[in-house]
Image 1 (cartoon, rainbow, N blue to C red):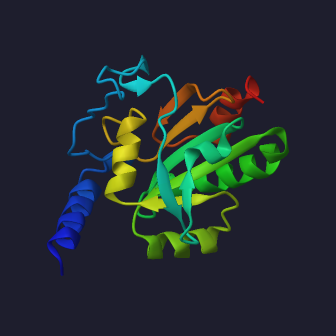
Image 2 (cartoon, rainbow, N blue to C red):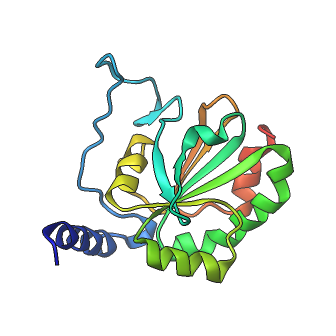
Amino acid sequence: MSSSNSRLISVALALAVASGAGGFALYQKLNQVTADGSEPARLHDGVPEIRPEFTLTDLAGTSRNIREWDGQVLLINFWATWCPPCQREIPAFIELQEKYAARGFQIVGIAIDREEPVRDFVDTMGINYPILTGEQDAIEIAQRYGNRLGALPYSVVVDRQGHIVSVQAGELTLEEAEKVLAGLL
């Protein structure tokens, strides 16, 4: 086993052990700066005002950039297959995607996990929205979106102009999500 794989397994185990109540401790400190070296504008508690850009690979092996969904209301959900609260909220997300897709709403799932278990989980659950995968890269993106405590699940709602309007550390219910989306769709 390579040292990189050993390190990822060690990190995953540490994260799983620390995951009580749907959260896990990330071991890196949020350290985001803009291109000119200044701190970006923040919504609150480390959450940026504007959606950070990123690119990850989907389950088909295609590189996907968050700009692909510009002009839509987004729910970006950071999750993992081994996270029980993440598993519980997936059926609500499937329902939300079906109900609001025609109104310009898109969920983008970001799995902080290996591709194989994610693929099996997506197939079993019948997930109807894009799933991007990453291990360390996904953790770093979650941090850039303000997830300083490393909570899983962690959901971010972005308006059509790219502004972050809501974050939820921990399980997001259908009712809570619909309240946030009501003023955006």
